[in-house]
Amino acid sequence: MSNYYERFYNDNFDVDFTTFHSLFDPDKGASFMNYYFFVNELRSLLTDPPMESDFILRYCAEKLFSYLQHYRLRKKVHKFLNYPEKQQILEKAAFILAQWYQPQKCMSYLYVSTSLQKIAEQVLECLQKENPAHPICSISEEQLLLWANNNIDDNHWNSIEGRQIIESLCKVLYNLDFRGTIVCNWDEGYILEQSCIDYVLQAKIGTTVILATIYHSVARRLGIRCDIIFHKSNMNYLLCWRAEYHTTNLKEKECFCIDFRRNEETVSTNYCPIINSAKYGINEYTKESPVKVMTYMNNDLYFETEPKVFIRQSNQELQTLINQIHL
Image (cartoon, rainbow, N blue to C red):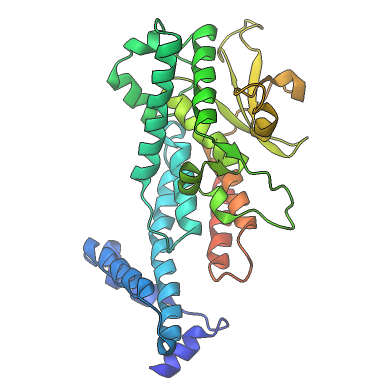
């Protein structure tokens, strides 16, 4: 057995985990509870105080635990990428990626969705105080639930009503102290957690693509369509929207955006970093698909993963999978 562990420990030893599939994969005849049994046992082993004599066993457990998580997540990725675009919700994509790059962390999508819903409720409270006659105050629960679970193709509100919602959204997130990370040097690298939505919702600081995802997800819950784009000129992610998308009225086609790197500039003057997109040379833009935005999220996470980390190969596999399906 010790020889097996030593071979397992050697990074050059190619471990074939397919022999374990029949033990935990329901598609291979295993009970669906087996996966959770193995995960709980491995997590218990890894959280116990380490002993000097079991470091090889712990290393084996780490690799097997990560393999189990990635095996299950790979199916989630395929399922998500094959959803109709309307059901490819960005916070779900961000959560799946956060799980993939943190395979040994205990995470819950319920925490992500509940956190976003609480922010949306705070925006509604702020809006009701400042604009009590806003029609969203009488919107049905069924409609709010529909927006929470589906992408929307246009704004539900006119230009004034939509602007009021966006301003309340920015005010609430500013008061909650959400801000973009200042680190811009790729040589130093970003902190991995700041590209993971579960961490950003708790710590309130993250990369611009994750901040844009949070703003986008809350706005969608309130009937506002936004689009995340990558602005090549300043190598930054922007959240863009207009009053109405399906119109020939040039005034309604005027585009606005939120630049998350301007957060520090606006602290002392204005909580709402809403900018006319013409300042950035953006009069028109092509909407990025949810899968394309998922590649943005994945690229940030992929480049923040050190080559020495043993899950690097699996991360490269995920990047290739998403890029292939996007193409």
